[in-house]
Structures are given as structure tokens and as C-alpha cells.
Image (cartoon, rainbow, N blue to C red; front, side):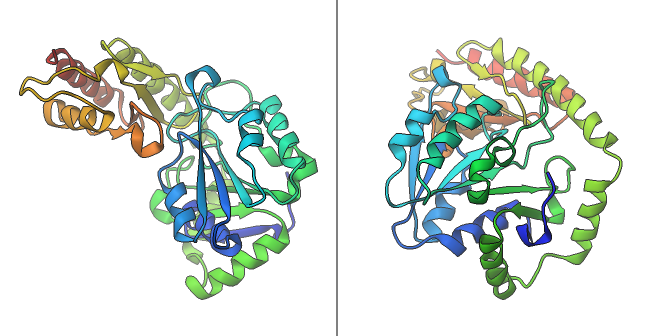
Length: 314
């Protein structure tokens, strides 16, 4: 999709772009609908800007994706934003065109509601179908969609801190006014590097996705074979979200009963030397998230260590 420059804002990473969008639009008590599991920063960003996070729990039956019925029930007269993150961090799920169109039909009935789509992992997909954005699939609400992206994930340029947002010029203008007082502008060096990444040879991205796919398959196989663990097979991104309900209630060798997923993560850290993040940090429990943005050797070693730590439970 092609956009005029007036529709585009650039910031110091996608995270800053999201924060500035909230700073430019949220008043006291304005609500932001956030499907769980969610990226850990969303609720705190809303709270920091005097808004109210409205968490909508999803389930395995719906593959941890927001349904139109849930969205309709969550919207009130105070709703300002709905956040959609796909491919999702932490779950890796992706919305189909039909699913996006169904959600857009709900948004269309509520003209006061905007949608922030966090698409930072849009190039890291494991299906053959290309990524579909909400703005592309639902032109009727395009003026109320703010699409956020960047170069941190697809191009492995996290430290360059360069993200961008695409939205209506009124919103973009307000964000730019704020940014001019907060940070002036993102680094011109990072902007030049990002432009080269986005417009240059995309062979690196294709090779990276192929490597991530192989690592995903390996991680799903290895962690799925561990007693008490059930990984969600991701459609994209580079995380494995693992249901660890089968470990709750079991006892460690030192007599500690694992009562929640935080205790599970502490046990894996202490007994296996493997650092994972508890699902409760993402709004769903009991889960933990691992990253497979590493070598296959490290995945093999990590899974073997976790398996040994789980076998030690009783």
C-alpha cells in the first residue's frame, strides 16, 4: 500500500511510536481494549498516559485470538483504542483476512474507536500466505487504523531504535508535535540504515524466516515431548508459548510445590539454567514463553535441560 508522507510518523523504535500515539490521544479514563495474551508493555503504556486497560481473555478454543463477539462486548462509550498484535508476541498467532474483516465490521459500528495494529513481526511468517494488515483488508475503517512497524525484528536491527507508524494525518500531526518536544526526532543515521534495509535486497529476510521456521519446528517437537508441557504452534514471530498447566501442583526436589507459572519459571531457572518468562506477565496463565531466535544447538540443549528439570519433579 502507498501512503502520502503526511500519513507517516517515525520514532525511536515501534515502542516509542505506540507510546506517543497514546500520549496524543488518551484522556483520563479513556479505555484501551487489549486481548490477552498481550505484549507486556501495552497495559503499562496505557496506564502511564492516564488511560484504562480493558483486558479481554482469549482461549485455546479460539486459538488465543480476539473474536468479534468479545470485541463488541468490550467496547463502551469510553473506548478510544483497540490493540491488535499479529504475529503476536508471545503467542505467534496471526489473523486471517476473514477474521480481520469480521473485527472491522464491529469497529465500523463504533465510529469513536480507533485500532492500533502492532505489525512488528509481519515479515516473520511460516505459512505460504502473505501477511494481511487490517488497513488493507478493511478500507472502510482505514482512517481509524494506526499501523505500527519497524526494523528491529525482521531486519535484526533492534539496537538502531527505528520504528514508524502509518495513520490519518490528524493523528500523525499530533504525534509529531509531541515528538518534537520529547525527542526532537529519531537518529538520522538510523533512518538512513532503515531505509536501506526496507528498500534493499530482501534475501536476508527470506533466509532468516527459513531458519526461524526450522527452529520453530525443532522447538515445538522438543518441548512438546516433555511431560506436562503443551506448546502452541506459532504462525509467525520467533516465540514458543508453552502451556505448563501439567506442572502446576507438582513438587520440586527441595519440597517446593509449584503453585503458579512464576514458580515454574523459577524452577526452570534454578534447576535447568534456562530463563523463560511466565505467562502471567502476558495476561494468561499458566504458561511460559521462550524465544527460538537462537541456534538449533541452544534449543536442543535448553529443551534437554528443561526435560531433566521436569523429570525431577514429583
